[in-house]
Structures are given as C-alpha cells and as structure tokens.
Amino acid sequence: MGRAGKSDRCDIFCVDQEKVSLLRQQVQTAAGLANFFKLLADETRLKIAYALSREELCVCDVAAIVGISVAAASHHLRLLKNSGLARQRRQGKMVFYTLQDQCVRLIIETALNHQQDRQHI
Image (cartoon, rainbow, N blue to C red; front, top):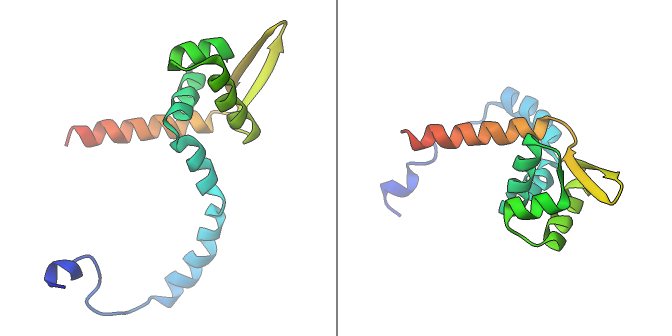
C-alpha cells in the first residue's frame, strides 16, 4: 500500500484520554438513532414524511402524491405511525396522517438545504 493509502489516518498513534472518556459517554445518547434514520432511508417513506411535513393527508392522497398503491401507502404510513414519527386520526371513513412533531420536518429541511448547498459548490 502506497502513501495514498495512509493519507486518511494519523502518522502516529496518540489518544487524548480526556476527550475519549468524555465523548465515549456522550455518544451513547445516539444509541438507537440508526433505526430512525433507517426508517427515513427508504425513498418512499422519506417522500411521504416530506409530504406530511407540509400537510395532513389521507392515505389516498399520499398514494397519489408518491405514485404508489393505496395498500403500499398504508403500509409505509403504518411503519411511520408505529415508530412514533406520524400519527393518524379517523374522520368518518377517511384516515388522515400527519407528522407526530416538527422535529422530522426540521431534519428533512436541513438535509434538503445541505443537498442544495452541496450542488452549488
């Protein structure tokens, strides 16, 4: 392996024990977040979450917006609801979904801003 293989790591091994001890404890607060991101890593669910961040929608509207069957939309919405990201309410024969809170909206908007900024570089 040539010099190029070593350019992404330190030339010497030196650990800052104080930083490591502090951050080792702090990173544990991120435990379980991977499941949250895995849920939104699905393109269809991300589009659904984005749409729900804009408007309360019934299952049929979600299916039409994303271009999937009502059954598929219902499946994705159920996953979002069961994970606590979305909530539902029934109005007569209609079932409406919205995001549980605005945190998901903020995450999606931040990611979109990041993506747009990267495209202008």
